[in-house]
Image (cartoon, rainbow, N blue to C red):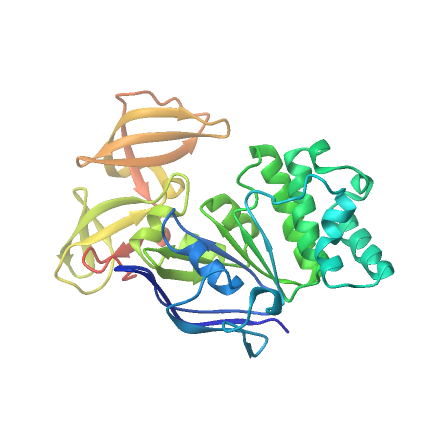
Length: 347
């Protein structure tokens, strides 16, 4: 069992607080993604779990054992870095087996593990090559294979696909998810790429300014963001926001239209709706088209609604041009409401 418990972890650098009292439990064999913009604390948290950084306070437990006082080599953890970190003077076989040699495992056990993980990563035909003869994607596979060969309780990955081109990233996402499921390894994956997070994670922990804002399944984070930051960060394009003022009896005025909303409240709220949840209708928000972006299967249309820019995803067969007047209606069961003071969801 390799359940990870992060208990009240905080990290300060002088007067700067990088992590604020982080609490998170990651289930055995779960694929957890730490997602956020640069500087949010996700890599710092990963490094603390790995033992490459010391927490200012708090505890880290793996499999019921407290490990934050142990050296990195004693934590049962393997790590995959952004820059591959493969040794150019060693063959692929020796790169994958390097950590096993350091543990002084018998040669037949080293061979067994190297061949097994190379097969998992589909690089068994490359075992006799040197890293200088490999492409970026192949080097990344070697780095992952080397980590898996250690048969760790936990594997940590710090933006391992960011140096690859778009097509190769897509291929590697699918491979990594399958390989980790097959190896039954608990994984923590750090990225700023929401597509990687949405496509790979069992759960996503969205981080902002040293805090975990929401930890939930990808579809829950996407459909029911817990805070304005999550709504604005997840999704491409992100959610639209319009000011809503109370009109009484559970009605709220949004862009001159009365819509159903929270049943109580006397202060303005933020009305939020995703672009794909907007529809052309006979009644709704009056919108002036500013930009039309044909994206193959659909049109991304940027409009002005009540002085605010709003994006809608419409059918590519529609004829829409700059300057057109549209009437857009939100899908009512997909609306989220946020308190502008706390920035948290209220419904």
